[in-house]
Figure 1 (cartoon, rainbow, N blue to C red):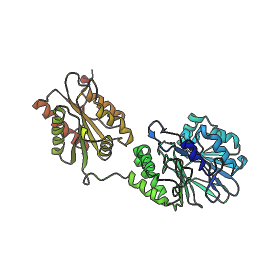
Figure 2 (figure 1 turned 120 degrees about the vertical axis):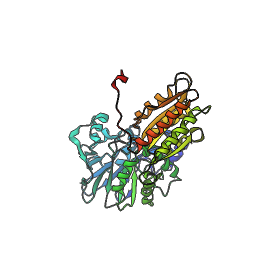
Figure 3 (figure 1 turned 90 degrees about the vertical axis):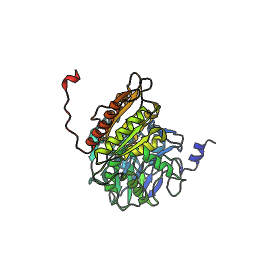
Figure 4 (figure 1 turned 90 degrees about the horizontal axis):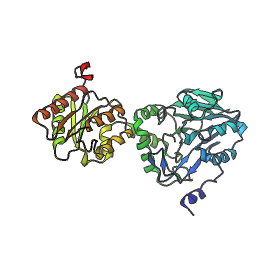
Length: 426
Ligand code: FEO
């Protein structure tokens, strides 16, 4: 028996729904064989696509659907607890196809159902699934729908991790249907966090690679979620968090809170370099010393060869500006630095100050390559980088020092307005 078969054999019935609260049912799908999610997350334990049915006295709501290839499993589970003509509401907490794949077919089978989606989701719904807007209601924080004695309320929690994301709150049961947040890519048919194996590494990994770039939006969402009297969190992936749900809220608060790296009013500049024979290192040292001498900036110097990519990301996440230096190798940036540049999408760097410098032998493209990458990541790159051919001369080292002073002034708002000489652009 394959391991995926053995997991499914322990499911609460491969066609059945699991009751997670009074007349609240999990109707999702198990995907134990998935090994990569969104091209970037490793999913060694597979995943689940969680969808839910909430029964009221008058009608039924379905919250989220599943990936298209898993539709039949989802529909069989729905049919075990509701008939399609009872469904008055389909809530879409998130439109990514792993949750909306079965949506068109659900709307076809449930002709009375209205669709509830965030305002940012409306144009995406059209682009992804071309769904008839006549059946659509846009909802925001404070809006709710009544199923007869049961009210579903909406919380607008965008950019976690798409613009459309929202959460849905079932107040009488204390259940938060949270969409992707609080999820884990972890497939275990025992379903509940107090019954499955140790999924915490998956929970942490998921935050680190999916939610971390959106820490400010996580903090905004937590402002809405923390006051709720939670009995359970029902996320869109992984275990249902019925035991100690507040632990996971607190953990998100910890993970989304920036570390204090500087004194009040002080800025943080980190200087990273790669150097084969000491030339770029010499530039880095005088640059850092110049920035330090300008005052108001805490400066640290780091040899990239001595750090893992994850350590560098942590350091960059918690600073206000970075200066990256390296030699040019075969017309490009060395791979050690590319590994960092290509991983910066995992952290929120928008608006940070960025700069580049380096020694070169004959062509010297690396500085421009770094600057282009930083701009594409939405760093501010206000100063053209400094370069030195081979071993930097005293004048080139003096220029590097001035560059550090200028960066410090940019960080502390003391930089003079730059005047662009239009002739230089010709
Ligand atoms: Fe689980 Fe963003 O999809």
